Length: 572
DNA sequence: GCCGTTTTCGGCCCGACTGTTTTCAGTCG
Image 1 (cartoon, rainbow, N blue to C red):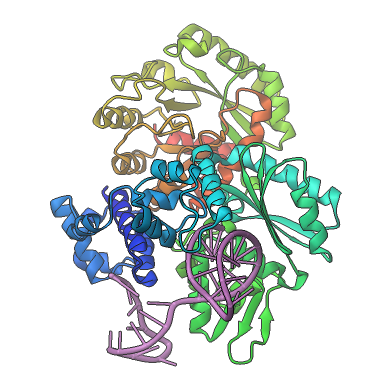
Image 2 (cartoon, chains in turn red, brown; image 1 turned 135 degrees about the vertical axis):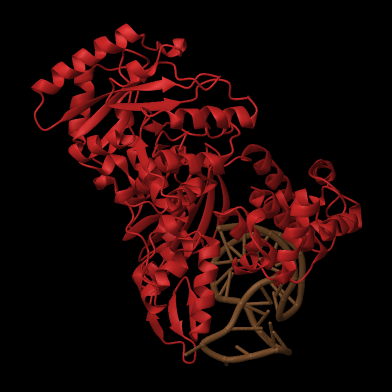
């Protein structure tokens, strides 16, 4: 799929146009088109001109550029702008506090073409004296460069969310707050986030702001205003806090939850209805009468929309669906009846079957699947055929004793580098459930990796593909696979895909979950638990599922035990 | 550059904070 490449090109054009000081609406048109291409489930290369024009934000001009790129691997207008804007200058835009106007100024006056040159001249205080630049601006640019170097990559959701909760707890203790909530991409539960946004109401915003910038977490105060402040924590996370009146809390929450693209669509709708929408409320245009804003749902209701859950607010079609009253009823944590990927101390887990059962029951589950590693994964003490069958005996015995709870006997079978399963079918057929996964050969060519997954899915006993892309956020990129082929094959063979809830994995990513659902693929959200506290990661997986528009009916482990067993037998 | 139950031309989301100004531009979200 060339979708991402073309989206990248449109974003690049937007960056360059920005430096050129072009019409901001034209720039936005490129960005919006890029965003829509990224979220597109079909391959643009396979679309006709008419179908291209149906994509929101794509008109004749951009459709032509898409076709041009598919044919020639180039977009001439981009090559042309590149000749006008010096190479590397666009990279200056990635420095926080430095925008297109300043970038252009720096190039024109000082011939600065990249971040290194910028840093050198800023340190030598050569920027001071340019129009609109004095000591403070120079300091801010240097600080921006530091931030860029330090916090380049986005942080995994699972690392940031606990910090956010901790800060909220501290704030509530330190000062008088009425309501407080997480907003931003963290509330949308994106798999990685760049900063923490918090929204609160209070009778005394000044006191809240003061308490905030003096929290023990604070390493640096970036901004300290009467209703809005920003700090950097010792972990290097930026936290923005905004305080609003109770009357505006809902509108503000909607506004600060974003996404930006979702908000822009809402405001456009408001304008068309003769209304005005901002973080203070939703107002009638002619006399500015406030129509709502205390509750978040006011905004959606008055715009004639269904309430859109935060995880869906990405402008990936949720607004159109909400207009038609056709939003899916998203899966919830309470729908989850069990965990289908769990390790014991037989392989690389830390607990006995009994301990795992207790922990699972404590979380209200009806069942869990025991899926230790297979023999090929020596490093994880993978089980031989004999040890596997021994474990199965134990599981059978426990199942006879247990009341109101079931163990599924399973295996996380390794998909070998040639695509064969680590156990033969005779063994796999004795399992209730088979979870297959790639654990090695991540650097094989795309074709080979795809072939391995396809061959696993064709095996009648393989129920689920675990962590389908193998990524470890911030540590290891996903291995390369032909995702379209994998999704099609999952649908065709009736093999479910795992949404691995381990915070560094969150794999399959929500970007692929939605297109997979549209193909009819089934899913399982699993924690891959090795230590019992990891059972609590389930909610991260549920969030990814919700971001992918999944419902209860899409999920294997939302089924009751009997239905689940029936579903698992269907493929065999 | 896109888009049209007010339009095929003229709109296009809105406000806080900072640093530089002396009324506002730039940046950010």
